[in-house]
Every structure is written in C-alpha cells, then in structure tokens.
Image: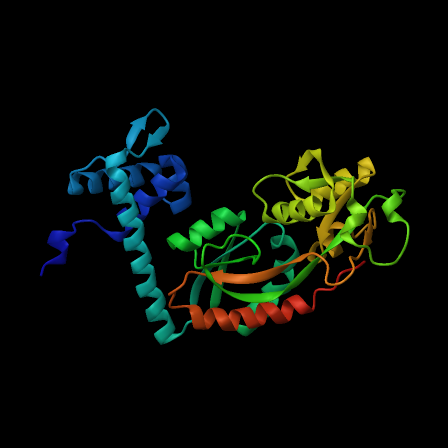
Length: 308
C-alpha cells in the first residue's frame, strides 16, 4: 500500500495546521513553530489543496475554523499525538534520558521550584534537555492531553482530567498578614476559622491556587477583596501596602517574603495545602522515565526550606 499516495500531507504541515487552529493567527502560529509566516502559510495552503477542504477562513488578521473543518483539525491532533508516541517509544527503547523533554509548570510553582530542581535534573540526566513553559493549569492540562507537551508540574487538587501523575510533595498554605493586623498577633498555629469575616486578597481567575484558597475562605466565612492579583509577587505587595490578609503556599515564602514584609502563621495540622505532582498523558511511552524524573524532583523539593 502506497501511504504517500493516500496521505499526501507531511507531519510538519499537520503541525502548522494545528498551530494555526490553536493560536487563531498565522503570525502567532509561525512564531510558535519558529518558522517564517510566508512559509507556514504556503504549507497550510498546500495541505488544504491536497485535502480538498478549506481549513481556515481568513478575514483580515483573524482566522476562523469553519465547522466542516473542525473534525479534520481534531484528527490532525490525534495523528500528531500518535507520531509523538512513536517517537517516545523509540526513545524509551534507546535512551529515554537523551534528547528533549517538554515540560510545563504553573506560575505559583515555577519560580520557586525550578531553581532548586534544575541542577539536580541536569546532574542526574546530563544528556536530557528540558524545555520548560509556564502556563496556568487548564492550559497545561490541555497541552499534555493533546500532546503539545510531554508533562507538567501541577497541583494534584486541580482538575487534571484523568492524567497519570506522580506526587512530588505536600505544600502547606500559610496565613500571611501585614504587620499590625490583628491576626499578626501570636505565635501559635491558627485554625481556618480565624478568617471569619476577614477580607482576603486572592489571585486572579484561572489560577488553581485561587480556587483552593476560595474553598478555604468559603468554609471559614471569609470574604474576597475587590482586587485580584496576577501573581504571588503582586499579591504580597498589595497585602503589605494595604494592611490586609492572604494565603501563601510554603514553597513561595523564601522568595516572596524574603524581606519579612508580612507576618506568616502556620495552620493547625493537618491544615490546608496542595499536593505538587508531575503529570503526563495516560498511555505515554515515557511513563517509566517520568517516574525517575519525579524521584529527582521529589528529592529536590524536600530540600526547599520555608523561611518563616
């Protein structure tokens, strides 16, 4: 059977097609694929003519996928995932720790864990290059599911949509308040009900840490302020300037509270928190290597000390 006669489309062309669909723009797709836009546009046009279907409606700078083309885009994603599985299976049979691994990480973990795990990973797997990307949970889960990246470091309490995972460690939450706030008094661990009627600063929508903090606030009777921070750094600055209250994961304390601008207090055990995890797509040929990489990350995570 002549497969080339049946499928006169290359994997590269399929990658370009999926990139345009995901980014909604030929320019942004070209940037993501590290190729010139005229080249990408030309290859997409070749694929459209080979399939006999218009995959994209071009209106000025905007690109729309017509309903008839959506099943073809979905199939293109599945083909790319299968090709990725073939690559990963070959890598595992040869040397799973040689080549490039694409990993994502959420913003409330990235700047605090990466500096501690980069060197151990490089030491344990010197021939493995890791390309990191920082995105919020929903986007990372979609990228892993679709095969755009190989795995991601996430919070296990978020909606991982059935991804396989390996726990890395427990990350407890701390109460963080500005000096002079009534909740700053005392040294003993507190219970969540101290937040009753408190106005708490939280992150913006889309952060899984926000959802976890909201659940705690709802149970404790706390209320959210009108301001929503885009990062933990901004959150700390706003709480410090306003004399307010927030919650912080312990992994972030050495960086975000390094100037001791906030008073942090532990919660009574077991207390609120999250489980950090390395997640990947079920059925991935890299599941065994991911287990070993998780071991390295787990060991590095235990060495991260909170300066409280």
